[in-house]
Amino acid sequence: MILLADLRNRFLAFSLYNGNREQVASFKTMVDKLKSADEYALSLRQFLLLNSLKPEEIEGALLESVVPTFTKRVEKAISTVLGKKILLFSHALKTGLKIRMDHPEEVGSNLLSAALGAIDDYQKDSLVICLGSCLSFSVVSKEKEYLGGSLFPGIRESLAQMITANAQLSEIELTRPGRLIGKSTSESMNSGLVRGYMLLLDRMSEEIEKEYGKPLLRVLTGPDAPILKDYLGHSYLYNPHLLFDGLFDIYEKNTGKK
Image (cartoon, rainbow, N blue to C red; front, side, top):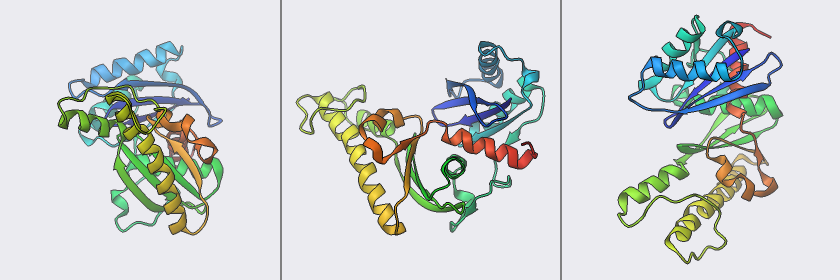
């Protein structure tokens, strides 16, 4: 078994993969700046216990992080539980991707991992759309070239900013509204956020394809993708494991495991 970990601004996700590149279990816990390495280690131990696994059954691990301030304590937690040194994603690792950017070192590890997962899963020129704390669009060619993309605030981050900046607005459940002209404040907020982001995805995808010059496989992923995925139709392929598929491939490339 290989343990893969994805550390984001809002959560820490663990995924276990077997040797056939199949996800066999996953777990997510909220990120808290007050949590110690021991508390993250406890979450990992509980995850393994729930899946009837012992730490010695895990042959190795790879941690991908976009939160530098928490990286060390999560790395320590995983190493402590497994009793071995783990791989930490960095631009020094082999990914197999050619990064066609002005500053390759600036590209987020999560974007690279998801892009690699898309190419290895589908072998097509792809537009990877990840809905998380940022809404990201990444273009990657079937020749494994990361060509760039666009970044927007995430849908939940936009909601949080609306509430913070407007005292009369409160938290709502994000669901698809039945109409654009909302008849209540919550319906109006859903119209703007959910329908607005749906239109944003469609129009941005169309414009990116025009600039690229040919159709792209549109792959939807990320923790907030379920909010929109059922409303977008067949133009998008939903893959919740995309980033972990890419991390698994990176692990194999850097350990020689096959």
